[in-house]
Length: 384
Image 1: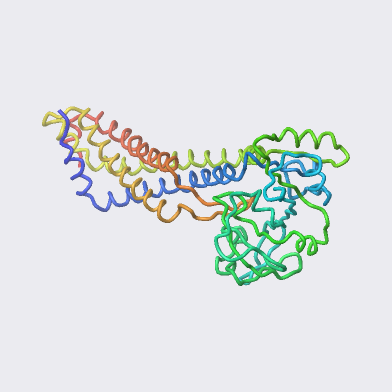
Image 2 (image 1 turned 90 degrees about the horizontal axis):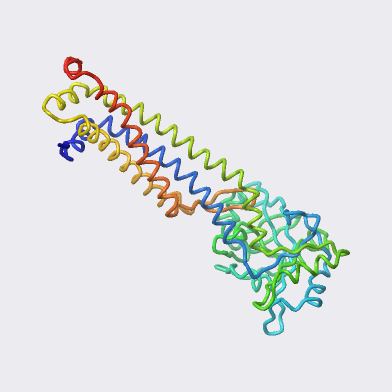
């Protein structure tokens, strides 16, 4: 026969201070798990949604995977459009975007700023970068820039300092912010965009970093790759945009593995903390446990009741942490080397966080309960 369900619930209410401390400890551990898993999921989501299967990037073969170090001739876009028919053409406009992409020091009005990512583009850029949407303000004109919604987080600045009408300084010039854009969580959201000609003048460069081509359904990236291999004098390489960001996934794989290792460490620490608190809770109830055995309850029933108490506390702590994570952490911007992204508390993060919490409740309650139940009933009844 099992103990009544209400018995375990009432036991938690009999010791409000100990219950509250245990609840806070469990909720803190689960919250740390939510933060780390949300970080991992946000990074993975940002890299996943950044690529477009129909877009091919053409950049320098010497830059390897770092496009910021790429330098190609300014005539490359015209060579590509003249030699290949694979790019989408609408209303007489070829969807090819020449771009100059650099990491440079950006100063804002509220401080020193930080290392920002600036992309010089033309009016054909939104035709190729189809995720980019202007959400406020206007497309940049002469001496103007538009900023991604996470650009402030990348610079370590406030949103007010990156508002429309404010100014930023980079490459020795002042630039006025004319608009803000979003890109559905893609990496572009941490960038600053300006006119290609203005950026080339400011940097005293006439070359490009890359050319992005939107291919038609009848074309394939293999045609562009073959052209780059045949024209060895240009020293170009072509890569589908999804493949490029997949390679970044592999580049950041050690970071993600380290983050998962932190989840394991935090969970292990939480289990030991739970063991410590549950040992203290059970140690003060030795006579109670012995009395239950004396009146006829089996050890299995008492063990289930003690585990029930631990699981109830862990479930309450997981629920509390989940609510806080969804309301306060979800969508929080995080600075990173590749730019910035948002912490993502999705279904996977909720499942892992709550699963760890329930695991803490079970594993934290079992060892002290088993130890108390192994003691002789007569000896335990005399315990003080």
